[in-house]
Amino acid sequence: MHRLKTQEDYLKGIRSLAGQIYSLDYSAEVASTYAPTVMYMAACMITNVLFVRKKNHSWYSNNRLLFITWSCLYDTVMEVNVMETKNVILELRTKRGLSQDELAEKIMVTRQAVSRWENGETVPNTDTLKLLSKVFDVSINTLLGQPRRLICQCCGMPLEDEIIGHDRDGAMNESYCKWCYADGMYTYSNMDDLIDVAVKHMMTDEFSEEQAREYMKDLLPKLDYWKRYDELSDGGQFDEFKHQLIKEINDLHIEGLPKVEKLNALVGQYVNLAYPLPSGETVKFLDDKKTYLGNQLECEFGGDRYFGVLAGMDFILVSTYDASGENPELVVYKKR
Image (cartoon, rainbow, N blue to C red; front, side, top):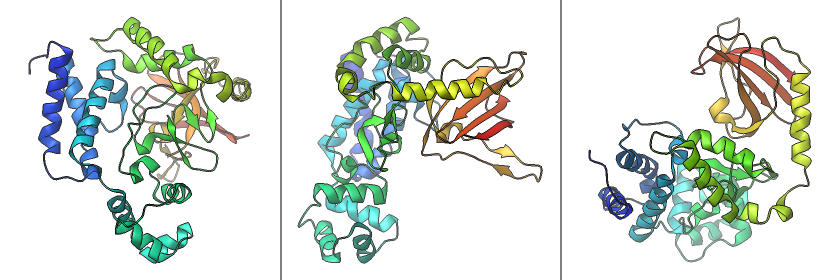
């Protein structure tokens, strides 16, 4: 596969690739399931990287071309077929095996109201959309047929429902990803700290560390969180919480564990290891959907084992594992 030479060629190539998928009569919801793979394929094409199917969203942070790719694909989807709210509600309700009466009871409306939505006679009001969002665990943007292109207003990551952050009451906050906003708390108060974390995931043979830093330094000040930082920040409360966690972890004096100096936001599904029990069974301690604070550190004694440190409001967990995350062993699980 030859490499495209200009951004214009690149955009044309993406539109062509997207068209091969979206020209079929898919609903927007079904079509959107293909979008991450198409975006990744396109990024591989433009950067001459071998395409390997991945199980997470790591390709979003490879380089700035992906942002262009995602924008282009999104526009293509919007041009072709946006799923109407009536169809979204009907499909989500059916998938969950709920009758109209059962859904109505969950969100405190009449069955007739649900029927009118699904017939396209009316659309739920804002308060009801929030309730539906909680019941179905999807964003209001999804319920409305994805009319908006959602981007994390802290780090710039394109947002899909499964990586959107949540408020304290469990409602989705469509302005932020899980890594930047969790349970009503902003996880970054320092732009340089966020850039340090992001750059590690952005570097490729085609996109150097210096380029990644320059890109993030240009992008972040344009995002709403950083423009309104004085208004949105919590006055340093979250930083104080992190410093307290770091102190408690270091006070454990675990042999071989280097001094912990930083804790980053980590989503449960990516760090929820299964620890073996003497019975031969395994146990997991985290919620895949929640965001925690943690870090990975090399063992002071060398070798191929790493320390993983994770913490939440009510616990501290320290483990060791191989470089690939395999063969985990629990070192400490301590209630706070």
